[in-house]
Length: 493
Image 1: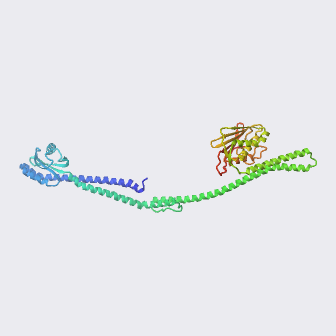
Image 2: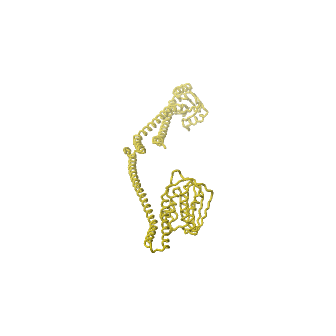
Image 3: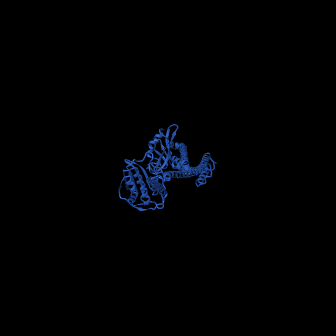
């Protein structure tokens, strides 16, 4: 882009210079034409001054007098030639060059007869001359001859050459003077104010947000300065407001995080109270019954009540064990075979599967590679999924599929049970949320926690014949990092 001084040169000074040059050229042309016409008139005046002596000499037939008259004309500077003709166009006397030309014969006759102008420009020896033809007339007999005077046109051009040169220098001087006046005037009128405004913008750009532009100077520049100042005031106010909002948002986020932790803790405490309260109430009731009927109760009743006590204690022990697993976030990452993880999980839930008469099928799709994982924790997660499937699909079939992905491993667990209740897909991984009669709601929460520890994703949903759970685990774990990301999951009870 052009800067302002060059814009002035491009849009003002160059057009102004062209106009000045055209105007000066037109004036010089008019002056040249005027001077040329004046010099032509001088030639005609000289010719008419010779008419009287030439007429007498022609009438008296004195060629010597004619020649003397022509010689006097030739002493005038820049006369290229002078010639005298009789009434028939015959050359009587001559001085200089350019006369007695066949081109003039018919022209001379026409001038004597009054049918042509008395002057024209002709070129002789590469010199352009003006030929003036002045008829010599007698009052009684009419035209008796003709005088031809040739004047060098270069005299006119040479006289105008200096005028043109002066005109060129004057035009250049006017253009330079106009340029100086325009540039200096622009700087005085607007340039200083613009420079002040640019310096103010530069200071603001470098971080001086408190600086304000000077609003003095031309109206337009002052308006820009005031607009810049208003913008900076608004910007500073907006920055203060943004900082205050960020501070408030930080406080609100901290409060929301604290409230969420308290809600989770309250929910966990409520779930624990519910899960542990029920078996403890049964145990307390059975102990009181044993005390009341210690002497009257039969041995069979006592055995039944002790068996019931043992069952409730085991239930309490299971809840406490899963709470301990849920709170344990330590893991030992190593390269392990996914098949070994599946085998350990199946071995741990063999009794549950046999109790529910469930059939298990394991399929591998593709070539499996070793993955970086905590084999115990990952096996625990898969064991909880299998226990969950056996509990909700008694007498059915459970399918475990292992499928390697480009950088991940997919573990799919499907059952042929009743599937997930509508509306529970987004809550099944919450602690103590269960859809089964005998579930305590910690199994799937533990599954999600373990999968997140391995920077993976777990999702649950329904398929054509029941429920399914998908665990997607990366094959390699980032060193020194634990997975804390929260994936939205839809899944099971």
